[in-house]
Length: 103
Image 1 (tube, rainbow, N blue to C red):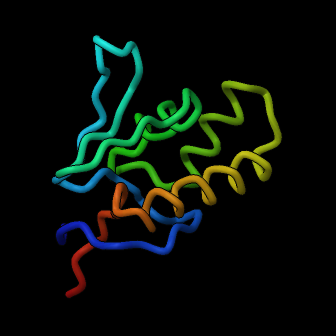
Image 2: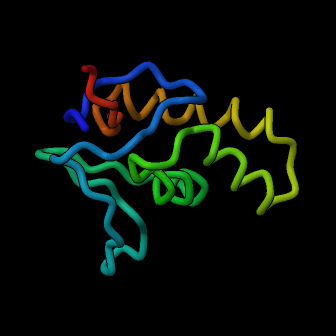
Image 3: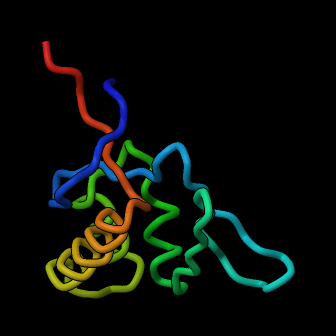
């Protein structure tokens, strides 16, 4: 695999937090945060659940499938919401994508 890169999120994207960002539970504040150099973001509960699925192996479509099954909700609505949320995080530098090497 090649290294991470900035992305335009789609159903086939395989998102992952970049090397400089970590999703951690802040025991003091009792909230999840994304820690990056000189920046902290506190995503809501739904965003945390989506981010925990962003391991660079699952694509956005797989994530939507998993959430649709868990919440018995329409896949297309979940997919649209997940794409918007992940694109926002990617635009802010909190998300990237793993891509296959090209021959």
